[in-house]
Amino acid sequence: MSNDMKALDFCDVVLLNGPNLNLLGTREPDLYGADTLEDIETKLTVKAQELGLKLEARQTNFEGELVSLIQQSKSMGAKFLIINAAAYTHTSIAIRDAISAVDVAFIEVHLSNIYKRERFRHHSYLSDRAEAVICGFGAMGYDVALDYVIGKLKGSL
Ligand code: DQA
Image (cartoon, rainbow, N blue to C red):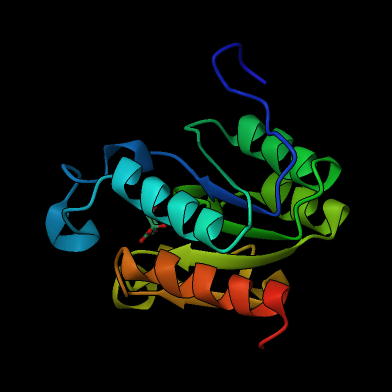
């Protein structure tokens, strides 16, 4: 874990975002929308908190750091991961292995519809392990993911 990455605290849900998602808001807004990552993280953190759940959010541009955060999720008691691994979705066996190793339920999120884009984005190393996959809804996809997680954790789903 790099020095400037804050270790996870005990929590119910972990929201992880991968490379280049720190640029949301200015990065190809036609594809990814106008919301910043801070907007998304704040909205989800507050919504979870209002329902008595603790959500921890982290973004990193580094593959190994995503692996470490996934490993920590389990030890920090997380029951669900919401993850947009960005480009690593299509390349990373290490992230797939980390998710298999911790055995924490997860929702895979993509802002854009990856199936409407280049062929190399059609394959995900994560989808066949995911409880659900959400793509093409823009930032709303994260809200849908959290609503599902809340439903599961509060027993209404
Ligand atoms: C993305 C889709 C990926 O193909 C891409 O590399 C990203 C973002 C999405 O949210 O639409 O960085 O995960």
